[in-house]
Image (cartoon, rainbow, N blue to C red; front, side, top):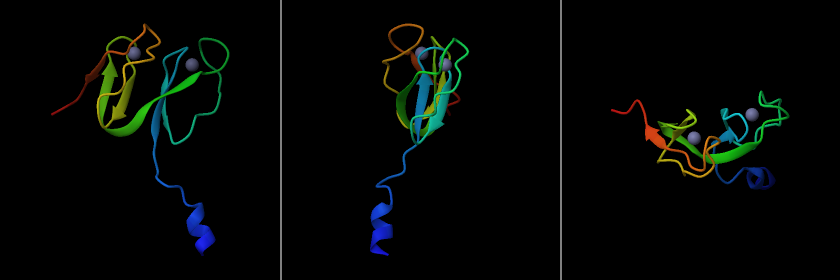
Length: 90
Ligand SMILES: [Zn+2]
Ligand SMILES: [Zn+2]
C-alpha cells in the first residue's frame, strides 16, 4: 500500500509543446514522441508552458495553445519571439 502511494506522481501537469521546425503544437504530459515532421526529418519539440483554460494565439506563427497565463515569448519558429494574443476571451 505504502509502496503504491510512493509511486504516484507528485502532480499531474500537461504541457504544450511546439515543433521548432514546422510550428505544429501538441499537448502532452511528457515530451511527445519524435514523429515525422513535414519540414523534413522529425519534429523538434520544445516545451512552451503548462496547459490552462485560456487560448492564446501567436500573431507570427499562428500557433494556438491553451494556457493559464500569457505564455513565455521565447522560441517562435518564425522569429525570435512569439507574439501571444488572448483569443476567444470574454
Ligand atoms: Zn515539425
Ligand atoms: Zn510564434
